[in-house]
Length: 316
Image (cartoon, rainbow, N blue to C red; front, side, top):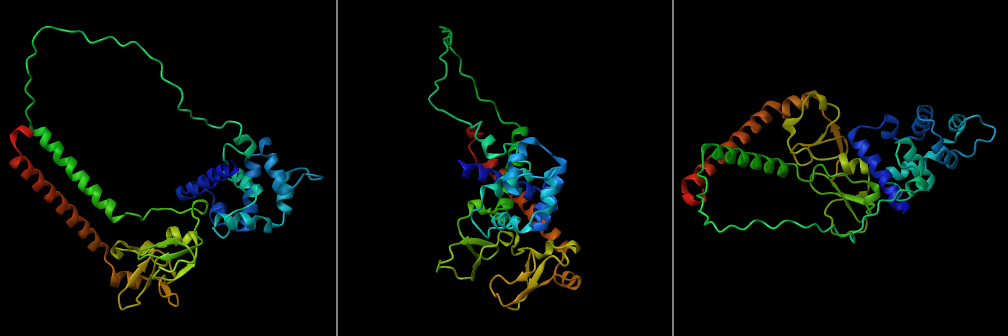
């Protein structure tokens, strides 16, 4: 049961982190920042229900007047096990660390003993009540067949718009397939990762089938480091943030700098204003989008026209 409780807390932490609903102290994790965040949260939400969590992590009050004194004087190394768990360095951590995380992110069903009080139980053995439904009235009058409604211009317009929408959505889904997948430590058993062409994927450390270097898993890189398929989308705000390399005479752009994912002896250089102006064109990207959209619209119109022209009239 505690595993379920732990997973709910970690999932909520990752979800809030992805949506940008956490403070900087909980995103850029360091022992000192966690200590500072504890002081802030204690002053903002001094709830009696959290005393059990605070006592388990910071110890009993003793001669101290309040927990903020214990928090301020704590050895910050005590925060490292929680940081190592959230960053994927370790796969388990003590219960007091999970409870502290629940308190920091204001997980509503904390602590674990409170979470156990109201379990949601769903049963399938309850039969719905039987009600007497009136039988439909019988009639002896002959029924006259009703002709199906004839198609009209509005139906054709609606069909055309629906087809264009479906094709556009399909193209967008194909171009972005797999790019938004997020891995979290609690649901990722693998301890290593390897490059798959445009991003890192988890892999067993002893796997012999990979054609690219296998390295220790890093959830920051696993979720955010990707190859940029369309460099023309880059603009001035990406200068210094995006990395690039030219390993085989062809420029490659990545969402961050650091070590090259295949040639680990090569370091990616940060994007400069000169590289942006000489090797990318945002106007070319806009032109590309316009051409694709125009092509989809023309293709959709042709398909709809041929459908209405050659389908048998009774199908319309």
